[in-house]
Image 1 (spheres, rainbow, N blue to C red):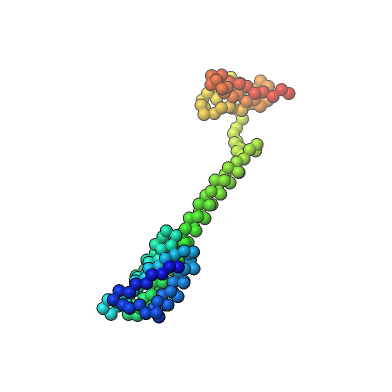
Image 2 (tube, rainbow, N blue to C red):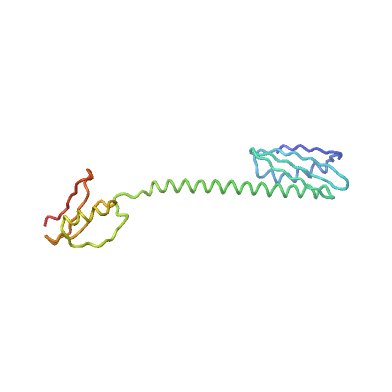
Amino acid sequence: MKIKITGKELKITDAINDYVERKLDRIDKYFEDAEAEVTLRTEKNEQIAEIYVTANGEKYRAVTEDKDMYASIDKDIDILEGQIRKSKTKKEKMMRDASIKTMETVDDKEAEITDEIVKTSYYEIKPMLPEDAVLKLKEKPTHNFLTFINVETGKVNVVHKLKDGKNYGLVEPEA
């Protein structure tokens, strides 16, 4: 991690420099290549630590003040670590959700059922003449066929609309 430490109206001692570097190791473990800009300053009785971390195209920032500079640096590190964890968790969740959605669409394509009965409809079969069945089918324009018991033969028949949309076909068992 590249670290740039700046002191405003404050001399950066070796002890502070080492402390900041040691604390930023906690942040460095989250990234392969990161940069940190640390600005330390004093205003009245307050010690202010401001840390910017740039990694993977994202920026994280924490500013805290305390009577003790070391405590201020510790607070900043805690804040940054929380921000980074939250960001990483959010990204992982998005990636996981995206992969689940991709899996679902792949599964839907793979799970396309062929050559199997996927729907069963139940309806009442009434005895009637084929001409009456045609009239009944005309009453239901969304239906393409009507199953009935032929009064003349006593067998199950089917009347269906032909592709020309004007005529009808009759399906009758042979035996």
